[in-house]
Length: 589
Image 1 (tube, rainbow, N blue to C red):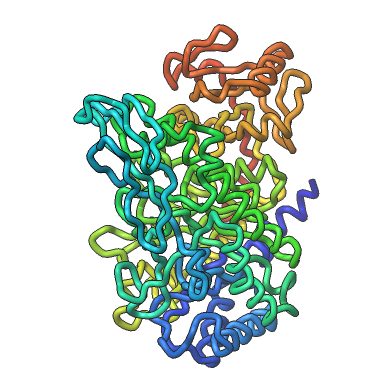
Image 2 (cartoon, helix red, strand yellow; image 1 turned 180 degrees about the vertical axis):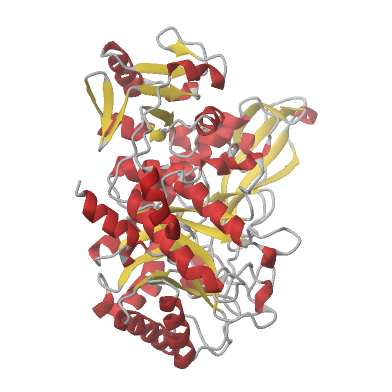
């Protein structure tokens, strides 16, 4: 490593490591105002931004229309003139995948779908339920339940004789696929949640719907901005794409046309009712397998084709899935991200160290390290102000959040958000503004430089740690990792699939990319099976250590999270000398 070069870049960090704020386009647009705000960003140390269409745009300005694209072109052109980068946003507004309702407008077969359960009394002769034109019967079952626990399920068909004598112990259940009625948030007043014009959501488990989404959105942007792709335009941000979108029909589950064939690869048709019977002993197991099917289809039919499109057009897919623990879908992103929002974690609260959301940061940085990706990010600060008034978020909290992320290896910061306009009622829409309309805007240059320095140091460097927590694709442990955070020990999450496909064992260590582990910790017993078990046994045979939170004859049993501590060695060294401190105090924001 060239130390003088590193120190120079640390003091004067490259623009590449700039914060990339969400810029809410939420009012009448003009070229003069767009240019004025971009130049103001630049003057405050910001060298990139996300163009985010947001509620408040005038109704006369249609999403992705020629007029809309003229403003986008002007903004990107202005960014290029000022040596800035642009990340496009793939929706108007979110969750992603519906192109502000354009995907389903002339294609009702692409509407977001769900499965509902219709119960009725058991009869001697089975009768099929009456269906609306947009409904389809998937299967009918006779159910015997006790205290909302499934005891038996039998497939029944229209017109057949039901042979059980005591009908009072049975119910007929018809499972019907239908449009879920779900929506996304739109960009005009009247298009928000539960409002009459809220855009209809698309079925993201339908590959044809995804292809339509790409044509509506990605191809539209490429046609208008082709000259900027791969230079000024560096990525497209996808935001919380969801199989159910928002406000789907109650007591339903996400579904798609051919879902049953995938469901029956993992579960029997007779286990379908368990999704509605949460008291059943095997509910968690059935639901987990069901969600695995959902996640598989989301990966294959939504994330994968969009990822390929981005690669083919010289840019990265960035953004984040809906769940904080969704490490399995990170492989589709060139710059995987997550979202610290709604004070899911907050200063002074145990939520920063435990619970699903506490896994953020480590989820993306671990995935990036194991997939060989340079950058991993976080959309941060959204609704993270005090609950009584989001606009009162203070500078101390801003620093706390970004430092929380830096400590976990995040090296790309997407501030949420800079408001184009705070004219009423726009200021009520997901505050605070952490940019030009914040009281610390005058100090933002220092904050931007701090973010650049930290992101520079965290990029193209390797996490040095001895321990990985084995995890599944959609669940991450947090109880044992909490002990690591509290005692200043580093770790990564290692997805089971990557353990099986990407690792090698050398000199008693498990190697993947530039990471090297001598300890593997496992909280979930179900992860030890098949090829994984063989690799772990070979690892132990070669001098590695495997620890489990459950009793196992082959590995070291940990009775509590704290019982791991005697096995850990610190590998942290701090080289900053006291002589350097006076000259570096200006680096603190």
